[in-house]
Length: 406
Ligand code: AMP
Image (tube, rainbow, N blue to C red; front, side, top):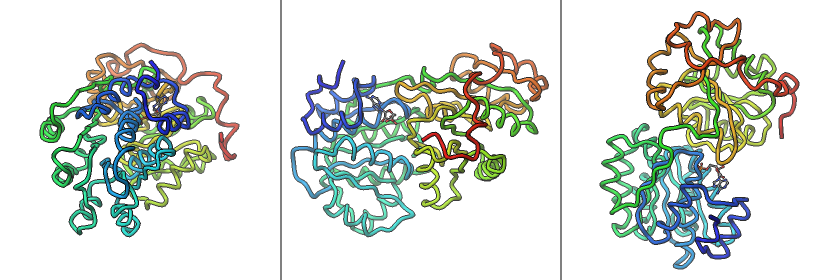
């Protein structure tokens, strides 16, 4: 199946060519015809499936005809990073449509946002809190919204945004088309979907499982050897972009400093940093200026870096959903990626939850001399691989302290 079967306007086909998309992904194949028909959609899909273009493309098509200078498309997203990423995708795919998109989120000036809301943009990509401020202050007229998208609804719930989201939904017309995307479906999201969507077409794409293109494994070790093991893995995987996850902001900051001292090209991405510093870290990582980004789950949510080759869980995530989300950063649409989780004897509970949710054991990879032998048998068992990493991967050592992979 190709994009041609959707019979998009030539201005949108030009955007698809600019993005270099050749064939639609499964969620695009299923969602686009329904959205074009005007139907509400409930999409159960994680980042990396192409879900953004699945709603952006038909939304652009629907908004091509009709008035300009009023807000007609509204996308609500949990984080600024995700909002920027969606805005970027609209800019690429919609470059020939003349439709304008703008972002609205906290931590930056309100005036450009007010101008966008008052006629400079037809599509607004917003985080809930700031958008609601504008609504309360009378700066956002959402009464002309034709298409409303709630993206990563489960994260909005995690972050406590659901009451704000419900207020925003109240401010858009009842007859508007609504699309809701979520990687998981806890009860709260089920209730939200029931309240917001009208007879939705439901699409479920590989729920709560890492993409098939990610090879992932657990590497047993002990707490005091984690950093040394991480250094060894970073050396072994070679050049490429690696995302390292830690449990807390403080650990992200400290680990990044440690790796920096060791000569790795590394930046931290965590919530204590200013918006500017976070954006800089992301941009540097995206451009290959830094090869390693050490991040917390919240800070890394929704970030779209298409070249991530490895994900390393320095700390095991708390839930299987977080595991899937972290792994979703690599092995994106048609790219392959590797993921490693450092596993200590304290991690049994999380490991069990992850393996239960995945419905299978995750491969164990033993690295000699890193304490894996001290991990209890039940954690250490699994299909035991050889040395960690993909041997012969060209060693990152050669790139230490240097420019980057470009
Ligand atoms: P998303 O799930 O929307 O975060 O998209 C994940 C990645 O897949 C992004 O880098 C997109 O640019 C890319 N992508 C989306 N649709 C396609 C497609 N049809 N073909 C190739 N890549 C795509």
